Length: 344
Image (cartoon, rainbow, N blue to C red; front, side, top):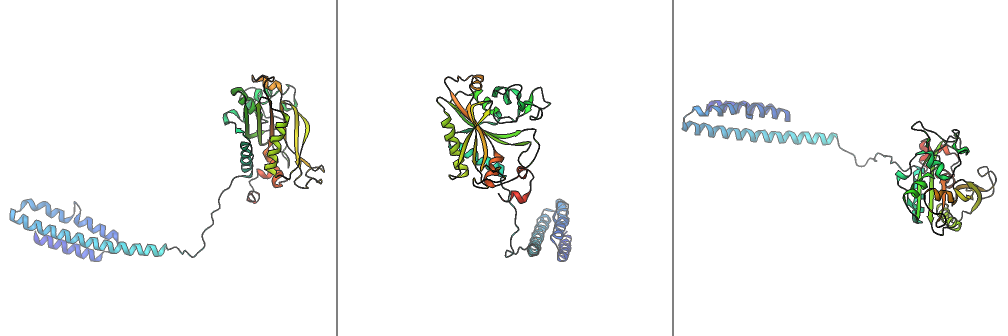
């Protein structure tokens, strides 16, 4: 049995000398030192020897096993170091080479404009309406009826409003003004909120109009709210958004849910008020509509117009972005042209 052990060690040493990789080392380890390996088979037969031979042969077997394990480890470390160095040499990075440019995404201009407008009004004490109070799919009640829009108003026609097939009288909202009804139904004055969101109108798409766009609705209801308060808030917004040098003007207008109503113009950014094609030679550009909340609207949501008054306003995000950044075609916001988007 001693001769067998020495012979096995000699064969293992010969195989180890021929090994050329870590895989070869593992194969040798399995052949000689695993549970089914040759050394283990010898150890299984020790029980058939005398006590004295067991001690002698067992000691020899352990000694040879330890020698072979040490030799395998040394050879394994040698191959591991060699293979690692070859891999590092092959995958070496030249840190003097310029890095690869990875383009970073940025906010869309309409998103950043909305965020800027919201931030300005938050600074004036307005809070943002929760999404559940400003749905894009509305009933005619919230989109028209509760806003004092007559049944025969042209805005209700299918030529202007998108009607859905979800249920009778369900529309894609044509204005964010419905949010003020949701808010006033669930909250008592004082109320000071803004509601940004998308709206949809059955328009022919051109440089000035799109069939969906973004609006921001504002509402302030409290005791003793006046048109002077409305002018003060909107003038401060325009001053911050466009800059202190941008003149404004209020013009009489009509909206079913406000009385009196007005449209607000700013001096044309293209011609500085001198008159050009963009402003049709007037020197002014409309930016928003506004007015005092009609008493009928307040009564409809259970607010006494003899105690409370309020104002509302609505502005188009695209229009404000076009004016501030001199964009002459609304379709540029939606075409995903990187040449346009990268400018902002």
